[in-house]
Length: 331
Image (cartoon, rainbow, N blue to C red; front, side, top):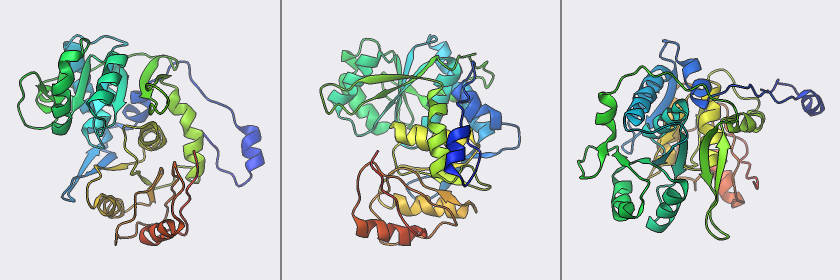
């Protein structure tokens, strides 16, 4: 969207919004890059440090399969699908399936307690939710109080009465799915506020919300994309920062993303994955507290935090990841 230049005044003067009449996030962030070449989309780093690589071709097939699952379960255009997950392979599959189906996705933070979870699911009217084993434990306690909720998909291998297996459902579904012809103004995602003043408010965003984030993401990362870039953020993909300032802007440009559920040495593992990919590492959103030691990724690293950080910690993090400075900006 931005044209690289060293002159800000010219950039500001010449900028024009480019919002097409028809636009779908799944098409823009996945299908455009699923060209049969197995172009890398995601490097997911497990808790033991092992990495799984998924291509855009695979991501299109998996999200199309789940879109068919949701269709078979009776969900129709405009219905809500919640993703009660942390950074994982399953999370973007859920969102992409919703986008390509004309459904509305609802990201939910895994540390929500039962009350916070119940409010958001009831308020959004979510008909389906995808979660992991720990999420199922919370959902099973409140499901009877959620009249709109029809189906719960669990990503683990455990079998639960009243839940469906996410992966078993996908395995038996077709990869053929006609992505909905959506307007840029059609609803795509509900992002809830934190609820610091009264109940959380659900902000309904259209597919064009992604386009609105692109100029900022491109500019603060020195006109993303650069050849060979890899994106990583410690910000959870349940928040708008993780989704629309990292994951989907990167995929819009065909940039691979490193994902990791932050437990223990997550910072080290994510950096190692970025380094092992052989590409420079982009790092938006607030950094975690630095680990005692971590390998330095190659070349590029930028970060912006949602709150001020201790200067000594910022300097230490800069040393660990091999960049000159860490920027902590107030957003």
